[in-house]
Image (cartoon, rainbow, N blue to C red):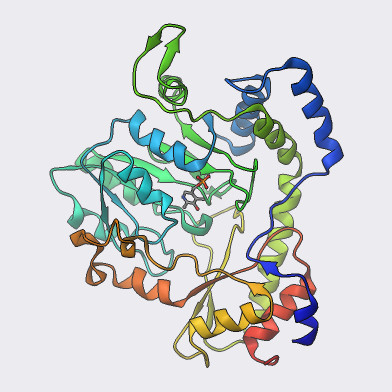
Length: 375
Ligand SMILES: *Cc1c(COP(=O)(O)O)cnc(C)c1O
C-alpha cells in the first residue's frame, strides 16, 4: 500500500495519443490550406478510412457521439416512445429527450447486460416507433432477435454503439446491424479524436440526409430542409483520427493482454465475477467490468473506496441507472420493480482500469488489493 500511495493516480482509462511529432505535419497542412471545417479533406479521408477499417458501407463524422445520437433519431423521424436500456451512459436517453421522445426502459439480460430481447415486446405500445439498444462494454446485443421484433412490429432500430468500435461478430462488423449505429470518439473511448463521433448507415441516401442535418439542414447554398444542428467534425479532430488509425491495432492488442491478465489473476478471488465475452469474434476490450457478489468480504462500495484510497480510480459504470436520474425516474417504466436485473448489476459493478499503457505490474497490484493480501 505504501508503494501504491506514491504512484501517480491510476484512472479507469487513459487516452491513447500518437507521437506528437507525427501530428505536426497534419497541422502544417491545415495551416497552409486554411480549411478548418465543413467537410474538409481530412474529414472526407477519415470517413473513407473508417469505412475500410470498420467494414461498413457509409459513415458520417460528427463533433461528438451525443449530437450523432440526436441526429440519428431525427434522420429517421423517430417520435413517440422508444424502447431503451437503463444500463448505459446517460447520453443514450438524453438523445431521446432532446427529440421530445419518451424513453421506455426495459430490463437487461443478466449475462450480456444488454437490453433483454425477451422483455421488449411487452413494452411496445401504439406510440412505440423504435428500439435504441446499447452494445454495453462493446459486447454485442442479440441483434438477430432484436431485428426480428422490429420487423414484426414495424419499428426502427438505432444502436448506441459508443463502446463497440472495431467489434466483430460471425458476420462481420457489429455496426452493420439495425437501421443506424452511432459511435463515440470521446477521449475515454477505444478510438479517440479528442471529441468526436459518427453515424454508420447502410445507404448513400440516408448518409446524405444525415450530412444535411449535421450542417444546419443546408442542402445547397440557399436551401434549408430541416432544423439541423451544427454537428460537423472539424479538420483538427479528423486529422488526429487519421493518425490514430495507424496505431489502433497496436492499442487493441495491448488491451487484450491486460484483459487476459486480469481474468487469469482474478480467477481465484472468491466473490469477484468477470464478465464473459458473448458472441464477439473480435472484441475491443473497451472496459474491464467486474461484479462484486454478496460472497465477497467487502461491499461493492467498500471495495471501490479501498481502491480509491490507494490511488486506483475505478468507476461504477453504470451506477446509478439512467432510470434513477430525476428527469427519468417519474416514468412507470423507470420503477425499480420493472428493472430488477439492471438494479442488481448496478449495485455490484466496478470497471477496473484498462488502457494500452497500463503496466502488468499495476494490474498485479490492483488484483492484490482486490484479493485482500494488501490491506
Ligand atoms: C460515451 C458515450 C456516449 C456519448 O458520446 P460522446 O462522444 O461523449 O458525446 C453515448 N453513449 C454511450 C453508451 C457512451 O458510452
